Length: 362
Ligand SMILES: NC(=O)c1ccc[n+]([C@@H]2O[C@H](COP(=O)([O-])OP(=O)(O)OC[C@H]3O[C@@H](n4cnc5c(N)ncnc54)[C@H](O)[C@@H]3O)[C@@H](O)[C@H]2O)c1
Image (tube, rainbow, N blue to C red; front, side, top):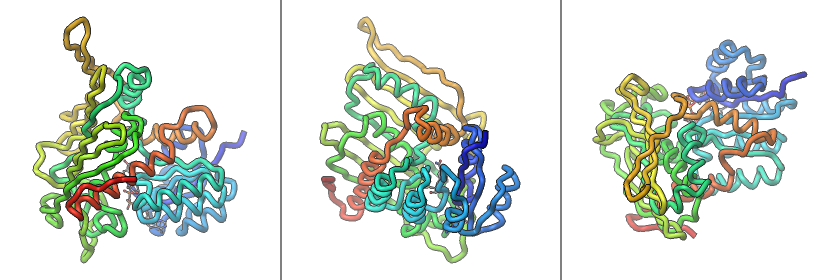
């Protein structure tokens, strides 16, 4: 039987996980497009992809039999590429952030409805074994109502290169708030996406442009390119349900080590998912934790949930879930409407910081 086909837009750092995810899900990656032909050729050679394109639109035009497309392009291209792909009749898996803002995200979600195609976003941290393990307790009612949560993705030296698209507001939508939105999203997922009401935030950019705060990964520096995004942000979100979320995101801030975590306090139990990165990403000093805190027979009880390790933080598993969701074999880890709520919060974080006042989300 002939395999179903996928195509991929963008041949940068995240693309490997998408291609590998499709291969594991039994899907053939038939085409790849990148304006940098060398990058597309490299991936094509590595994974045996037959067709290379330098234009995303040309790939859509030529690969009519493709059933899935991954959008692995810089953030400012997501909205247009997703809408074009949906209009051409393909199911779309788009990298995070969904787009530059909530308005673009709303247009993408509407386009999916109009085209009657599946649109999913890569909130890969939901696909981590630890996140799915905690979600079982939450869905089963063991945690009760999550009153409050704290979401952190904080680095000391983690600016992803200077002057490229990541550090320019018009191309990326912002700095670590939008780039490292994963834990905000994961906290909302655990809290079951309540409607946000108020956002109060502050952003800082003390280390903007300072090479000492550059991360060991990211994209190459661009000479003469600018950096006009924040380097850290602290926010407080109150929902219409009365629930509360506190968030911290930083590329550059005086933190002890890189921490990626969500902690929550429910009416029956609390819990935590956390990765403490090692010196240079994953090394022998990195620690993954997944825990539940409760009371049993009048005593505090801490449970450590043991899951299989996933160094890739769900990046491949999320692609497999996309394929299986389209086929109706699995529940999707994310729904498009959730992306709109997330992006409304992100927008409000930036507006609150700029206006120096709380912002009401209607
Ligand atoms: N889920 C995650 O953990 C994760 C991690 C990294 C990046 N990302 C997301 O993935 C996306 C891509 O990030 P990246 O780190 O791979 O960036 P990157 O800059 O390494 O790759 C982007 C690629 O797109 C190509 N490109 C630019 N304009 C194009 C166009 N008009 N047509 C075709 N190709 C074009 C570039 O040449 C480049 O090869 C971003 O949205 C980013 O936020 C997600």
